[in-house]
Image 1 (cartoon, one colour):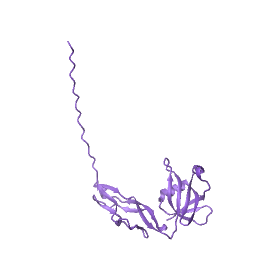
Image 2: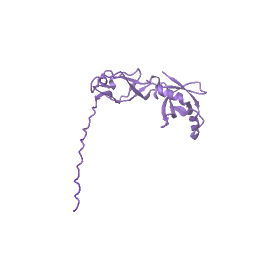
Image 3: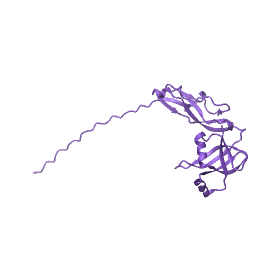
Image 4: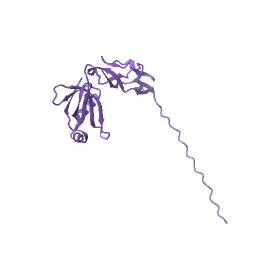
Length: 210
């Protein structure tokens, strides 16, 4: 699956990019191995929609205005406004479709764990992303892990338990026994005993001097 994003070449830089953002555009750059770096601008709404739909690890087809061919790119870095969460700058990495890449892919849980359903234990999502190697066209949008078989405390899904898509592999340095998801003992809230109020001791009334 690939998605197309429209872009235009950018001539503004420095403080002038603030005007672009007010116009609903995000300044960015495109670079890569043996690729001349160019400055671009993309619509903020379209970029946000792409990121929300497929994340940052999915291969995009960048259509730069005035160019005949699409550029296969990955979002290498996305800077957000800390107050509004709107994109303020984006770096696109142009890839070679014949060379393998190493990328981080999000792990998504599916199914219902019997241990959680029947309050036997708590589900711990230990690893949220997995580093994989594959050709750019084979990058999975997500890696799905089924938790419906986790019924008892200490039941777990390990790296060796999941089946990766064709052409996708994890680094040989990653331990295949690494736990991705597990069931932990449910935590029981302990109520602290309430201390009984101690009645105040009345002081004897002072004796009047004769």
